[in-house]
Length: 132
Ligand SMILES: [Zn+2]
Image (cartoon, rainbow, N blue to C red):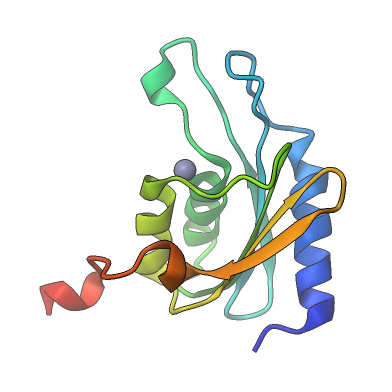
């Protein structure tokens, strides 16, 4: 269960870290904050590269950082963009590896918020259970 206070904190953290995004090519800055199963918040930003295909999204940046810190369960994600953008397909797939049907909070720098869930964003996903 994710509390309203945790959601508000996640949204604030996502927009705060967004300022550190490295997006000189698209100029589409993204910040992500994930709430871990043990209550930590870990953030990430999109990092672009002159070789465009090497760029990484904020969501995956945050999740990979979390995994390196020992996290194996994610219970909520907040994403801050300029226009309440939704995560790309690659990030949705990475999220299902570490999460159940968790809240996904989308926001922008003006404070608009849209809440959805991971399973709404990626129904009928391919997950770890398919390999059992
Ligand atoms: Zn993505």
